[in-house]
Length: 422
Figure 1: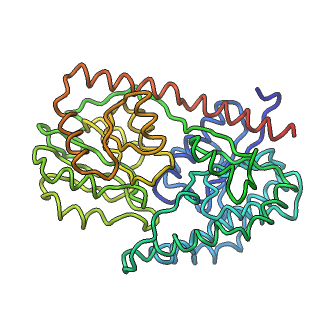
Figure 2: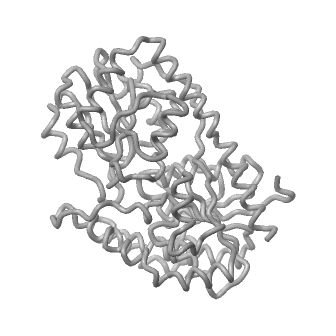
């Protein structure tokens, strides 16, 4: 337990993108504040979900007027997948430079960086002139579990640049910088599952060994249930069919093509995808889906879904489909989301996802990247008895209690304590 109110600068450079970033910026800061920390949020240019943020907010643009030209340059580069990575580098570099400056000026105890990847070397580089800074850096493990190098096509250019950049980012050339940075300042690295904790502990010949902590994601149960009929009416979805939901930003780890292949021969099932691509890493779902499913059997909502709309999607669905490529070993936050709303999951059997599905049984498993296996799992799910579905919903609630935001926040405070007493 903390003996004094810890002062935290929570830094989320990518809160203006879709995906988990804006949710984390709003909900993790809220949880830390409610647990007793003094928290301020720093972003590059605000969060998409800015209205949901309960803590004081700062932006790079509001802190440094000279950053305005870079702000416009980053906005320009963000328009194309091939140049978006240069935009991201500018955004995180400038945001972290401001964070280091604010630490000196406002005397924060902790800089909590939400998502230190892909440019993990930047916090070490920018704080190198200083000593005694305390960094807690969350990692999704996207650097150490890269996607396969794609074929050279125009639509794959963004992904190709990313995979090539990771070769440089994971180079041993950075090891001396990390060693010096770790000697001058205090760092802990927060991974979302035990596999990535192990693999980051051995990263670059163990340069981070002893400083990698497993901190599972947090979530909350939603108690205000919307009826399935009302939710489908609100979204314009059919009332009389099984509805399966794919939710969140498509990216290179998500395997949505297997979902489409599985649904091709299940005409009684209606498919909904909600979420916009963030970094140009996933397939163009609207184009690919038409090769498998007729337009009257699906709805592709290719835009950011605000928190106020999420309940309608999850309560409208009979189940959420969580499909990832075999090599994907990062944590799948969609399981936390579906359990939060009590929506059963049909999930691929890879990494931590398989372990959690087996431990809590909030749904059914299928073999990753196997359309026939997924098709059988969907048929099995459709034929379940009401009491079996209810048992899955109850298990979703149990999952949400085990991984509550309150527990997440208290573990964070304990980690901060460990940094401060060293």
